[in-house]
Length: 98
Image (cartoon, rainbow, N blue to C red; front, side, top):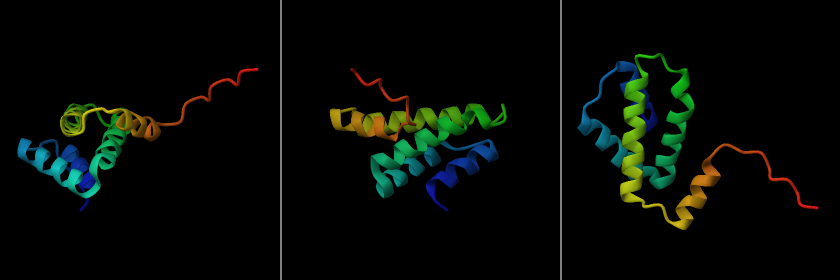
């Protein structure tokens, strides 16, 4: 079972122990690094509105924990901000100057 599946399983179960959250984030960081943390963060943000109301608080807690872990171990440097911008959904292109 991969780390994202573990996260969704705990959200579906409705409970998670804080040590399980930390262990999952450490394991994700060890396997995929900062990109894996961003991917989980983006997946949680994307799926949040689709969750039933009772599951949303735990999903928000996972999202906050992921953000806190990522910002603690990977401070936002210039390169970091650039990678984050590329991982976001496509935005409208800027108008071409004439």
